[in-house]
Amino acid sequence: MERSEFESLLSMAKFFQEASAVKQNYDRSVFWLGFQRGISRLFHGEKSGTVEEHEKWMTAADGEYPKELYDGYRTGFTYHDQKLEI
Image 1 (cartoon, helix red, strand yellow):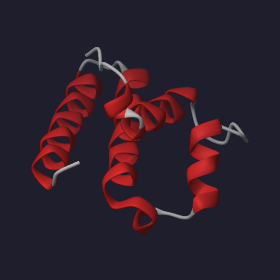
Image 2 (tube, one colour):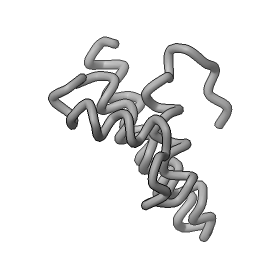
Image 3 (tube, rainbow, N blue to C red):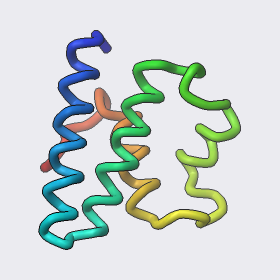
Image 4 (cartoon, one colour):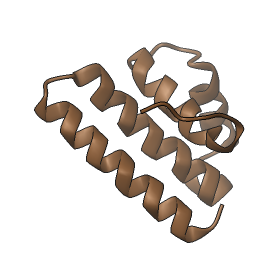
């Protein structure tokens, strides 16, 4: 992923996160927070957290955070493997 694509996706995700919060669609807002974290991991690699943290986010192993946050992370991290429906 090129830096320009990363920055564009990050900007888009922040916009949708804020717009969702304004509409009080908090599940979707949390999804976009996770997406931001996922694309950061995709772009920065291991500089953006440990392997253990990444595995936790990919499997939603402990249920510590809302499902939507994990879903957003996985969608962001696997962005190039899928079509994103907004």
